[in-house]
Image (tube, rainbow, N blue to C red):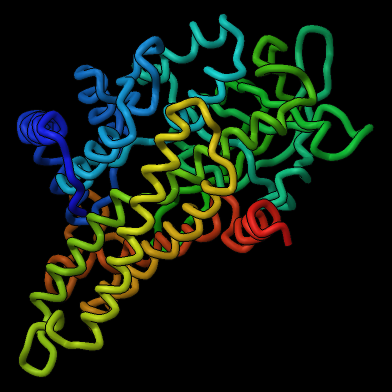
Length: 398
């Protein structure tokens, strides 16, 4: 995307490129480019490299160890690290819990947890969704009953992304049933090593055990792990979700996917000519690129407003819907472009060190894996159907 960057912004882009050329391990970049599964150690290695440079907390103010970057700088950074095939920055501690603690946490919680998020001492996962409370989070049933200076937690969370790696989980729990559902929810920080917690993997369509069920049976959690006030967790949950849904837009990932799609369409032949020269296919690529450019502008506006202290509202729902639709459209066009080479998908081939070979060009395997995995985009973080309802009520007043 072509913006009228200032000389300082161009210099900043060059600085990021030089950093990536020097510090991004070729092994990690090759795994990402090939669609190979990344391990916990891979993510931790990349996080540590970014943290050593001071570039991990890209959405955080400098007072908490973040970069303090403006919206354009963050946009440039995201654009460059995705183009370089760097591992994604795991968002749960950095982009979800971090902002909540800064806004609503106690001074003791901020002093303890924020540095540990940056250092990688704590790996957080998100305990929001339940079997009967996905997009309808007000219906959470996992209970936390006060017993002296502890809460006793019982219940189940599901779709917990990378929960198998986490040693901490931030949870929505029900602390009261005496009022409206939203008014009886609290926001609790829980150590995953506490007795009574069980993590069970859920294998996705691409063969990846990326998400999990987390079961709580008489789990004792210190009262000081409550964020903010008891029964006010719905406010904190909504604050977190606005940041999550804005990030789910995934402009950088969409740009990288679009660039890959164009390369594939330039190599794949159709009637003796590159597929990208087919007017019908080229028109679909052009339309998704136009949509991405428009979303990029909206994303920058929303991020800039958030940086100025304004929590995104319905804008985050708009970005979530449009961003996920665009990424899925790009995935579908890429799958269409590789044609029959998308069919022989073998999940085991994605494991590092696997001897399983994939028939067809090397780029076909990550295309199929990404297509399968990203079917979830329109569901998690609040399904797109629910986000459209939020938009219709909040903006259109329907």
